[in-house]
Image 1: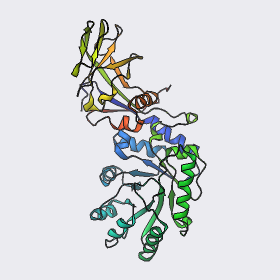
Image 2: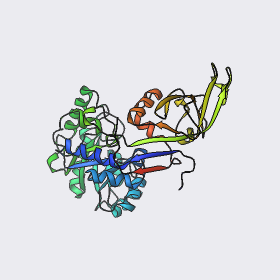
Image 3: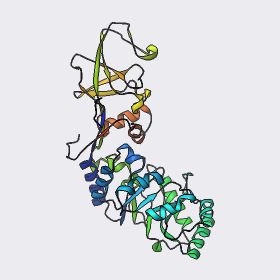
Image 4: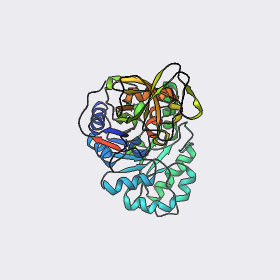
Length: 362
């Protein structure tokens, strides 16, 4: 579709591939690198992104739903795909046919699928080590499931857990101890894939014993607390100036008159709004026009927002709404959230433009 509005996301495929290559080379003591591509590859969209992740070295994919898995499977037939979410027993035959690996998130779920034909279905056991979202929580439940798997000859391909506060060494250590306790009576060396480390855990701690897999999420797109990795930005959001207004002192801007000019001011109207994912809480934070930061003023509208500018700004100038990863972090701080939410909020009506060249990063 033609981009008539001048509002778009730019996705750098080369930077995605290079980021993954760098991570696989740096943390090279794993056999399995799961590229987590849920939520449309963290709002990057398109199968091109997933192909770049695979080209960089990921040999397994992870998604959140069967719908996501099947969308990928239409285009990529041979790579294994793990669904991290819960798949209803009614749809397990689809998983067998399309070779989608399922997660066992609880004893209750496991009991509901036992009457189903599970032949040819690969499964991973999720262990709850403290996050209290999904996962098997007691050793008794774990041993019961393990016995049933052996009795039925089911294909248990993997076991995993999720580290929910990798920034806290004490909490992470506790989680690893719980994992070891719950799997104490299982010979992990006989499980083909054991994966615990995700993006932040991977970069903060030594290789976790008995694991041969790791999951790469937002880190593939250049976000990491560890600057030594020198990862590159892959996602930026742009729009354009569609009108310029000269305000007199005391005039207001936008719905509910929440901004009043303190002097004679110039306002740029930009062709993007909360329907595109730039929610109203963005008011007050900076965008960039010709490399210069300018503040968003007034309430953001559904399709437009207003920016206080100066005489250097002209009609149809490009507006960098999310300039790079550094800027995205600043926006996340302003919104009191995390970069994940900032980029995942950018909606589908914003076209994605894919580039292949490597760009210089700050």
